[in-house]
Amino acid sequence: MTPKNMALSTIQQIWQQITQARRVAIFLPHNRNVVAGAWALQYLLYNHQKTAHIFSDNQVFAKKLDFLPYSTPIYSEIELEYTNQINIKVQNKNLKSLKYEFETLNGEDLLTLQLTSDQHLAAKDIILGEKSFNYDLIINLNAPSTEMLGSFYVKHQKFFKQAPVVNIDIDPDNELYGHINLVKIQENSIANLLLEFYLEISPTLLNRNSSSLLLSQLLLDNSSETNFKNHPLVKELIRYGADYRLIMDKLFHQNDSQYLQCLGTVLKNLQIKNKVAVTMLSQKMITPEIDIQHFIKQIVNDTLQHVKEIQALVFSIEENQEWKHIIYDFSGDHGLYYKLNRHYHVLGMNQNQIVLSSPLESIESCQDKIIRALRN
Image (cartoon, rainbow, N blue to C red; front, side, top):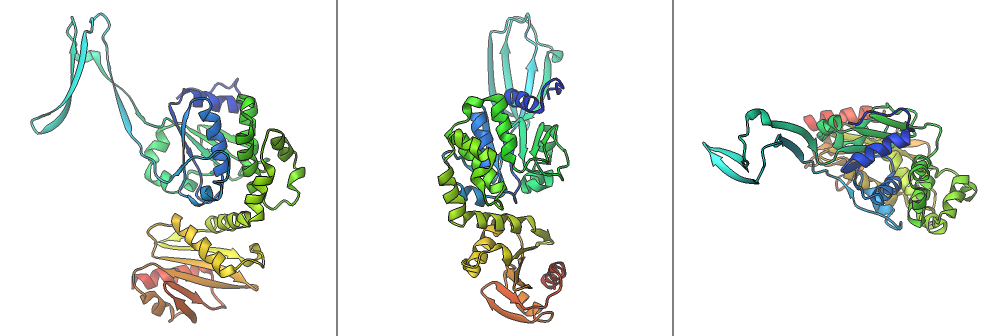
């Protein structure tokens, strides 16, 4: 890893790492919609002939943003390959040819190298060199901790410990876990930091594609604001060519923004314990004209893409100042319905959906009862 040059700005230090990397892995948190920002960063890298791929446990957000002028796949799995390098000293050896073959000797599979030279090679001339993964730089966007990267960090901790990590975020709870940390808690969007990259590294790449991506990220990060067009950064991105009308229409006028905001809240509240997941949402976040039953069904289906191998999901929804627990049973039989009937008044059951009535104890206590019920 290249030592940090303290004479460089943080962005210049990050760019130095990027220019020295062969392939870059960009990771996103599962419960925050930073896809547009990731595409903006990737667009900058691609235009500097850098290979960069984006990874996230969440595939939902990308589908909602497929109208943008630039988009690439968001991968739910990463294929890591380990490279072992063998160095051979050939100075003054007059190397004439190099061949290799695979063979089996005494029951072992071997890779045999055949070097033809004028001089004998000694064991001291052969050095086992650097070991590295096929991605040699990690950039995490808007992930305050590595745990927020979900299954990627759990499955590939060795990779995260070996490769240099760039941590770009605006969250005040960021743990500053990166080798280089660009964390500005005073900013209201990750788009602000990414625009700084463009302005400092390649301002000529601020065009319709990049500015539309940055504008989308800015609007999603500030969806509670009402007067978007007067935001100074919005005006700046429009000058660079961002299609403001298209983005506003797709994100907000079609209720997509509300859905993404609700889904983000549901995923943020998601907690899993012993294969039982719980989450909650207030009806206040849903406008009256929305079909709430269809809305909940859609949000639950999308949530299930991020909670694999669970036996039950408890979705708690606040309606008219009362909370209602909807339990989705994935345990394989319908015994959970009868077991829960001992503890609660069950309003009804539809396929794998169990609805409990109010008043209710806390969602955590409900979670514990379901865990015990599934064990018995």
